[in-house]
Amino acid sequence: MPDEDLARAIRPRVRRKILKILCKRKRASVHEIAKELEISESSASKHLKLLYDLGILNYEEKPPEKYYFINVEYIDELLSVYEKVVQQLSK
Image (tube, rainbow, N blue to C red; front, side, top):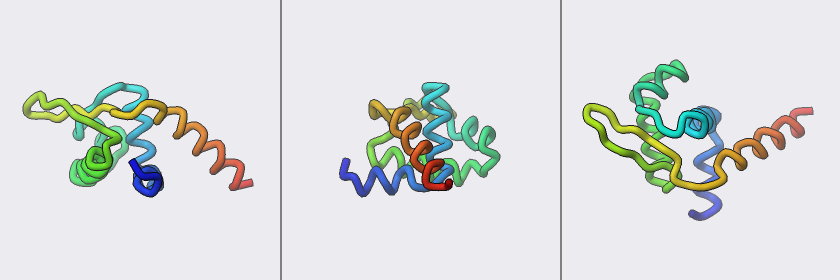
């Protein structure tokens, strides 16, 4: 994945929150993610689709739900470092 796509994927805070949920839970449905983040299912679905299209996520269908999971190693480490850099820049 080109670095521009990765930067685009993790720039919005809501996408980083989605990825953190998936790092902790290993897999989750659109409904579960929307509920946990208190956003609409439509919004959650759009973010998940973008992350899927970029190759960061994959999913398994268990009708009526799709369960998303992380498809790339080290995302949890990347998010951790990203947050540390943001905190340092905020000082």
